[in-house]
Length: 186
Ligand code: 5GP
Image (tube, rainbow, N blue to C red; front, side, top):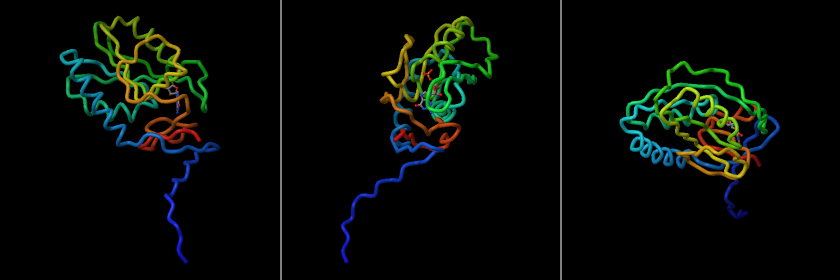
């Protein structure tokens, strides 16, 4: 008996009660990061920037990005949170603070994803009180539709539709951060 061969659809990824499908492949992320890092290396040459990585979600993106930064720089970490499940709670908690003197410094805030922008907006206001010379924002993903804040997003890999995504550091209820690719909710 002869069977027609159809392309095999990959099975969706199940995380707790939700299903996710492949959305952005790691190879495409890496290629965007290479371009982004080259731009940062040029723009901020001689400025010895401080990269402030927003935990938890940005840890994989920051690691890939910062490995491609060739200018002198420092790295610090801050933990903010406004999400529970697939909805922003709108409440920002700063759990791990900053212990660097940022006065007069060039800062690059590294985020996984900017949705409404409200989490970062509050953090940027806190940073401004520390009198840095300039603050840039680098994000792997931006959702232009729900974005409500006014700060410029200086370095961005992908603008995406307003859908919940996981993988590449991003989680759903603590799961999914370990995928090298980005998935979106089905
Ligand atoms: P915002 O304050 O911009 O609305 O939300 C920022 C934070 O919410 C991000 O740093 C990220 O932790 C989380 N977030 C926003 N959109 C998504 C999403 O689609 N998937 C996941 N996993 N987290 C998201």
